[in-house]
Image (cartoon, rainbow, N blue to C red; front, side, top):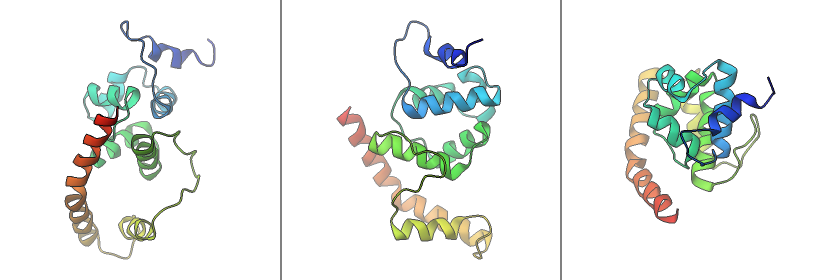
Length: 153
């Protein structure tokens, strides 16, 4: 068996000639490493739809945070690293960063990351409330950004 053979399997998809995105190749490599042979296997392991997995691999989309958490868990990757990969690919259209690579971040994003991280001195209930508040505040803008990306495609 050739080293790249497992990834070749994913490229032959019922007559479709689409190429996976860089993020898609990363997801497929993680699937192989976890013994998930098919997209439906990842979907089942993450408790998401197979269509969600397909869109993540072949299109430039940004799944909801809860979906990212589920997929990261099923792929056995750090949730924050996976979120950065998804965000970078979906919003900028560039190659995802390598694991551990530092990206320029807004100081507020750094502070929020520390506040919401496990082990933060902020009580769990307050962290959950803060996360919910922020999620609700930015949701309209997420929709707007998705619309812009679709129109730009």
